[in-house]
Image (tube, rainbow, N blue to C red; front, side):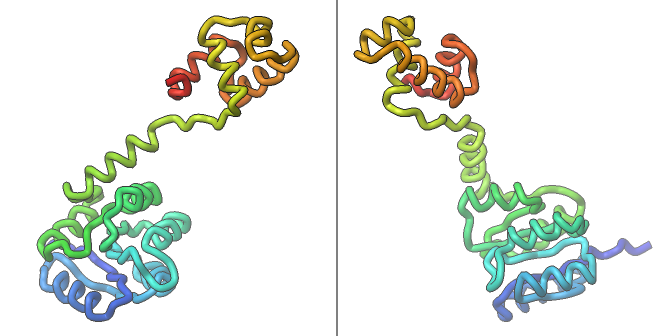
Length: 213
């Protein structure tokens, strides 16, 4: 019994490139091209009508980018899996594409064999990220995993540093030449920004956020 071919819609605003990709994929007996589109709006219409296994979508389209197309498909619960192709290989873009639900991301100059392999992998439910793109993606993951530090005023930072040195509010007030009530006000704002309720927790949070380095 012959295996069902993987259905694909090709989306690219450059007819020459789109035609080349379509011909290249169609030469593989495992793939069936069921539609083409040159804009994001056309892509959503064709994909919604044909419901292909895979949508091969260029990142840069005239009316929206490929990530927006991916987001719209996920929003509408369309089961088609999106494989983005782009000349843009920035880690932040790749990260956002995956975040929005893309099943893979390829450089636009990828060889035909790599493109076909990626389509087949995506159709099987796998996620495809070439090795050349993983370093930038990993950097983005590490960056976004770091907790973001709140913006402290210079005086709030002075209070925080005083707490780290073990000073009390009266001692801080004397050192900063302000009233204890003023230090208490800065302390309360500091607690709110760090989402803590006491000095020890404030210092611990500051160390985690590297505010005391």
